[in-house]
Image (cartoon, rainbow, N blue to C red; front, top):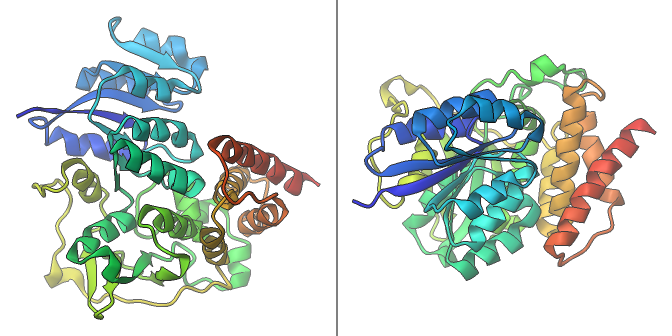
Length: 384
């Protein structure tokens, strides 16, 4: 059997580490040939030694010497802001797992798509920022985009139960985050520690804060819009605190197909790697005898206004996604630095969206300009 050659972008993060756990059980099918990280050079070095990969990329050029001193002398070491793109260019591979958090993953994702790779995409920001450009590029090159986000993986799987033209709507499930039952006045005074205390999923700090604001679900609305070719009004959100149903697809005959499982990212990661095959996976199994009840409730857009913004951005398209994502990334960073309050995250994003000069059919360069402008505008909004 020909072994598939895999590059993992963001190998030191939560998704990246889980991908390596999955691949450890699939060594007869896959070789890890390239790894990339942002700043965690020590973990990257350790991973490169374990997997005997051909090259590594580190975005933080200031740690270049440290990384080179910790790895084999025959390992290619690429550093700097373009290192991930260079890794895709230099290393022959079949599969690229994009596990980078934020818009930083977009250039490498675009390059992998242009080269016709199979892309397991956990980086929702790439689709939020450049959905139409990325999906068209993939279609032109023959690249395959397979979502790793648990919700979009669920939709991808459920859609195989019928024809695309028979889909009435998709339903994204949301855990509700740590503040699901909190009143608005208590949410307004939420601390960083409280926002990082997710009740169900084990994720990195940025995604966990996005879950607390429900901005992650707003971003997923936009992601689903482009990934599946949906209209914004074909996407619904339902709060499902147990996180057992990962999302659903309703067909026009009334049938609803749902994908269920434990809240474990190994399942969608492996599915992206082995699709259309389903192999034994190291994820925890769902035990219906001990599961108990599953509950559902409508999202409260008054307490969590990010959802309203997500629908607006999905409807508008153009540069709205780039501004939306960049403003959120910057505002979350300020919250993590304790420079703004929790509710200031979404209100700042809305203010920046309202101020931006909208372009309906932007080029990639215009999207990058909109991204840079939004990050600067967040600072202007929060320091004036």
